[in-house]
Length: 412
Image (tube, rainbow, N blue to C red; front, top):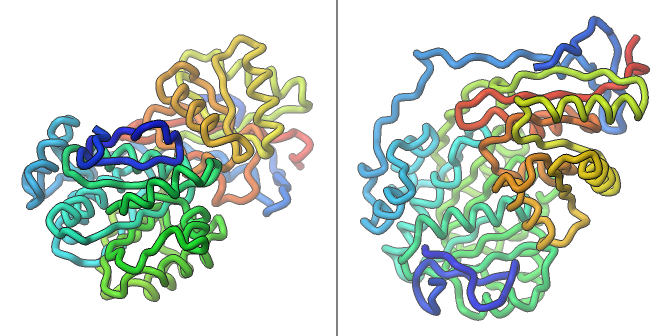
């Protein structure tokens, strides 16, 4: 999967896996007893205060396999070794052998635990071993779809497979061209995949593998009808991979509807927030609020910070204010073009900027392992949104920090 952009197709791209057409801590805790009132739900501010849980030595997972143990094509093992990966994470260790045996998989694991490799390896291996097989991978956000593309390309480099990425926010014409190349792998967001089906430019009837990544988030974002429609277009005889951080009634219902005797692999260890030190910052007015944020950002511990705002305009304005104050900051939201979003995210990942202001579009779409702090400059609409937001910190075995701004007028 030496997956490189082909020609000049930009974000709406075809991609090859090395085959044809060369693609070649805070002291603001107070004893106030108030509520934070939002349009979504009323959240008592005390729910934003929680110490991080230390992982005990006896809780460290001991894998049963190494990547070299898996019965996959030698090329995949070679590409995995080149990435320097030897030991699989729990979700990878337990789900890959089951998936390689041809079973449907329901994988339940915390965010940031390596779910992409858990499905990428068995999917690519089957595509290499079974000519004619095809796979569709759905993700809730454009950013996550692009990250999946990068990971799958690196694992399948040199495999000869060809793929297309179908996401919104970009011109559809290059996607039409990519689909004409009859790709074996399609990665996309539900809305754009549905658009292509309705236009007659995408036929899924011979796709015999489906991956739904961050399945619960897609349901939260209102994609349930789109997913039903898309799943109904796939081959009846197919292998399904449903990966989620939760397994509530809505998730269970669709799993039962669209899988056959799935094997559930659950390696969820506590809540995603357990590795995040959570606290609040009280402010009295806008002037104090921005000054308090400034003080937090100049702390040496705040090495890479994700700040959440509730509106597109607010995110842009706050990002510019921080730039004016001398911070290396950027902003990202659904109103920006995909090119601008991708560029801003690349700058954040590469540390060209170390502060990113975002709306909730980024809550499940940013996969950056070294975020030290998540700051809720605007309080979340729901507690579920809060959990999704702060799950961006405290990843890869590290302790993260989450700070939520609460107006003092909300106290009793």
